[in-house]
Image 1 (cartoon, helix red, strand yellow):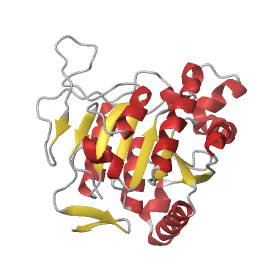
Image 2 (image 1 turned 90 degrees about the horizontal axis):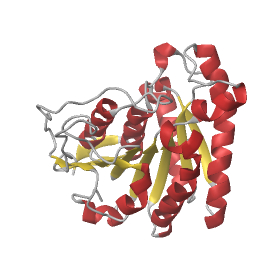
Image 3 (image 1 turned 135 degrees about the vertical axis):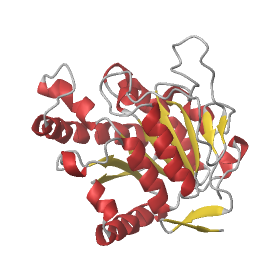
Image 4 (image 1 turned 180 degrees about the vertical axis):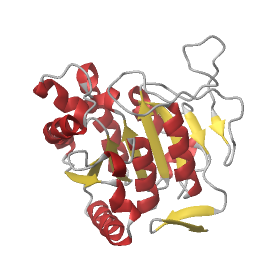
Length: 272
């Protein structure tokens, strides 16, 4: 069921959680353990969990002796090739504590834009979840080109939520919520709830992440939240450090109401 309030999160049956590069790479690689703890808790109570994880390029950078995110496509692809393997290993190593098996799913934008690969992806994801596997989804950076990229994994997460008929999308980053202006500025106030269709008039939304290793910011999260909400999923935006409390239904972050009278089924928003 699509939760209508944070208190109903514990009743959500199918949940997509997206985590950004800066939250699980570099100095923050240690956050993978607590993130897995939270996902395992939801998995234990019967929820079907999909993790959309950025971080392949950021994880691979030290092994290519890169001090900053590469700008050319070929080096990005090389870093992703190295980093994706290490990233999934780290997740599985942590998931082993709970006896949960991860399944890697790499997608390009073209996979979700064309009917045949889209159906294939949907069928594979549904089967993985039925088998109680935890899919870990990322953009296939090793083969994606600038012309067919999702652009950021917030958008990918929203499209995955739509694809699998998720009840809830949780977008994690290094900021605990959306604010009326960049949170470091005086007078910034947390936006607790966004009714469906609210244009957020007067809100100053930034377009870049602050850590320098990812591609998303508040603007991409708002855009993704609207896509998922239109498809029938509620959306919660909060910090990776608060994921355990978020999945337990705590009153934190920014909540986007799902479209009223709609629910996500078989990858499409339909009338309830």
